[in-house]
Image 1 (cartoon, rainbow, N blue to C red):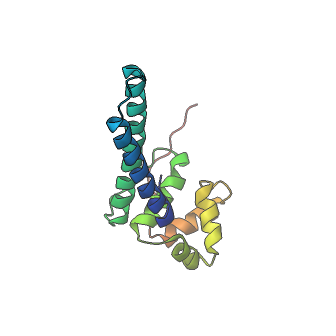
Image 2 (cartoon, helix red, strand yellow; image 1 turned 90 degrees about the horizontal axis):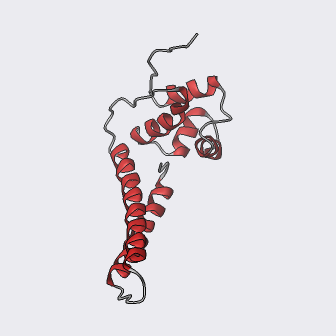
Image 3 (cartoon, rainbow, N blue to C red; image 1 turned 45 degrees about the vertical axis):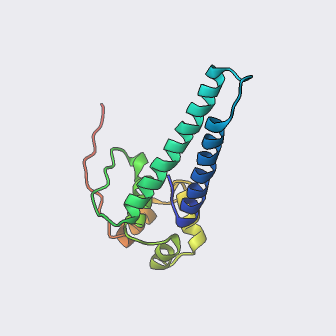
Amino acid sequence: MIKNERQYKITKSQIKKFDAALGALVARDDADAGARLRKLEEDALRSQLDELRDEVEAYEQLRSGRREPIAIESFDQLPRALVQARIVAGLSQKELAERLGLKEQQIQRYEATDYSSASLTRLKEIAEALGASITGEMTYSP
């Protein structure tokens, strides 16, 4: 998942490199290389390209600001949803940090580690700073 503009730019650059590598592979005349090996290389490059493009598309959709509910099916998905909510809100990590009275590096650490060191209180504060509300139901197994 792309979490900020820096990662977005890096991913866009990677797409160009993979695209060029794929083009070079397709254009290469390898009589010595087996067709099967060439097909495997091509498939691997295409798969990586598709993955990168999907990440860029997802980031661009979030960045567009369309405020559709972000589905969370488990507590483990909350960190990702908070990052998505920040992007949808059009806030940088620095701007979110300022709203919370924190340093930008703290938000970067939280997001890099999927909020593993954040307390429940801090998660609530972050959601509130983003204007997000978390609703749903809790189920249990006896």
